[in-house]
Image 1 (cartoon, helix red, strand yellow):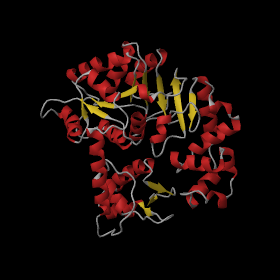
Image 2: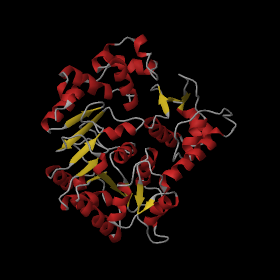
Image 3: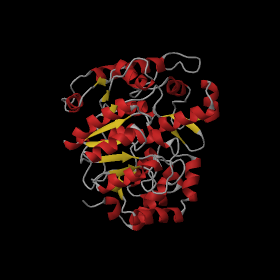
Image 4: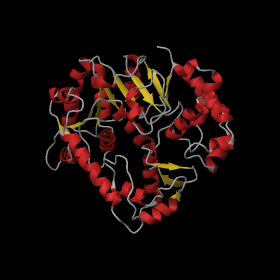
Length: 403
């Protein structure tokens, strides 16, 4: 299949890559700019007045666009794409995974290193996630479920991490199936380095490494939640094997619930720390699975048929709306809300303290003071909320509500 990114002129490729390198231009903003003008070259040629016509564009972002991007950095990325035979899937192109459009902020560009040349088939993909330190039982259960799924031509998706992720990837390869690692780094710098041989074997045997981050990107703490949303969107179902009460695997499950992707998990022993996450998911409506047939039953269920998970999700969404609409000292206005399934108490507090008026923002430090939480924690939450399309920023550490 031809690649639409490669079919564009080199100048347009540079303009697209440059757009993603501007601080404050996240996935949502980049896509809005492109949808407004059609090409990245036209975005760069737009006047200040024309740029202001796009929601969320303020003085700071305009100044950064006027400063432009580092041409040497963009040339380095283009060289890496050629040298390592990395595909680029452009938002809106035929090769772009259609399931990513479920996300409120799908990536503008998705980088692929491997043999996946056809459009993504989410309906034949299943994610396995869990702790980085599983016990022997968790490893054995992952292997016993992944191998037959891989042999039955299910693509196994995970995050490439140590533990359950790596076990799932290896089991898929040994089952002669396809497996994909979604990374929180560039596909030329797969993390962690301990899995270097595994990543190489995956690519050589018909799998792939995917990332929304360009070649050369090193992993950072804030990149892993962004990766998690892609894992959930690229899968027909998410299986959580073992994890603690505060594991990143639970964030992947939360991302899956928001886009109505079934969440499955395995029960564990009472009071076992590695069972705390799965037991929480079971209490809140996840499908309890104990065998491959259980997983396949969930994955092949009739679309739209009510399930325990979907019924629970609707209840949680209503509870979140009730919490946000409840009068508080900072906000006594009732607002129309999007789906807030799985929102944490901190997210609800932040939303209560953000202005709803168009083009009005509130400074990060002021938000932190009002919600009574350290600035670092509020900043991390706002990054995720921006990715979910709940908040927007003009790029000067000030935020507004998107609804």
